[in-house]
Amino acid sequence: MPLVIYDTRIKGALNLKLFSVGPVACRPEVLEEMSKQMFSHRSEEYKKLHRETVNRLKELLETKNKVFLFPSSGSGIMESSVRNCVEKKMLCCINGNFGRRYADVGAANGKIVERVEMEPGKPITPEILDEKLRSNPDVEAVSITYNETSIGLLNPLQELAEVVKNHGKLLLVDAVSAMGGVEIMIDDWSIDVCFASSQKCFGVPPGLAVASVSEEALEKSKQVTERGWYFDLQLYEYYDREKDSTAMTPPIPQISALNKSLELMEEDGKKSQFELYSKRNDKIISGIKKLGLSTFPEEGYESPTVACINAPEKISGVKIYEKMREKGFELALGYGQLKKTTFRIGNMGYIRFEDIDSMLQALGEVLSENS
Image (cartoon, rainbow, N blue to C red; front, side, top):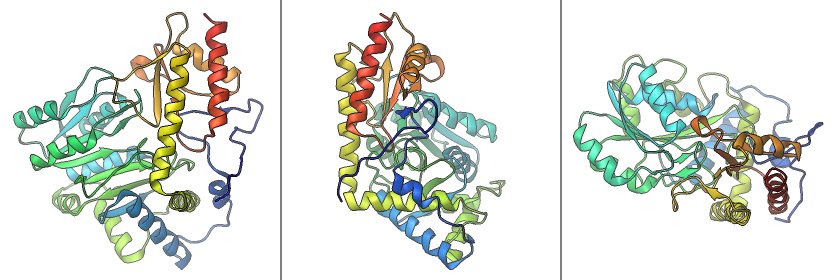
């Protein structure tokens, strides 16, 4: 496929280039799919689109499990996994705000929530998880945030999954800022529910979420009462199997865009896609280190899709974010308790290497002007 240069800036007075953590810049081919005239979600045209998209997701995730399309953000599937896969008690792995969100969702839905909570910046380790499961044999499911967006940390999911399965528990994985940018082997790693949102690595506008769901998770769902309606996995399974559709009206433009994004990934090869994220992230990290900055997570566990950077003493992460906007670049604020002491640089969606060079040059100017 020939290289085509596209404008990745937000159109408008600020003309910002996006290095956010979602929503992200989208390729024009992807956006073009969203401009097409609508058709019924009960039509043959939609059924074809639905099946193509689902099959492409299965190929990406290397799974024979069911894959469902949800008209929501990833947090909707998070709640669905809690309501469908947990009757009484779950264990949540936490080393950032989105792992904590899983625990909050569990508690809000009346579940008993055990927690493995690490110091910010530290990964969940297999040894700690194993010890926690030994002392809590009655938990039914374990939630893990693969890529903790709030601190730019990639947890060792494959090793953690092995521990969870050795204890015979269901595994629920938040892969919102990982899926499409990092390898995920659903079947080999025995993941029961794995979900993501359209507006991250897939480079599609927000409004759509996707999830793979194992037979074990679907069987558990049958046993659970009060699993709701909108996110009832049994309902999704029926409509996917019998109608190649969803129970409620899906966001057809986003699904069309996702199908195109997956098609482009296939053309390039998914290994090339993962390598691209790694190369772009390496360029960002190398650049910030040359500027005298450092990353927040423990070395060796840095995310390849979101870099969390320690702000220098003389300027807060908030001010860096604001000054970068003035120079035409939308980064991301630090999250939660790290808002003032860090800032984040997203590496998702459509970003060119020359855009990274321009962003790093502007960041150097901001640091020099505020030293």
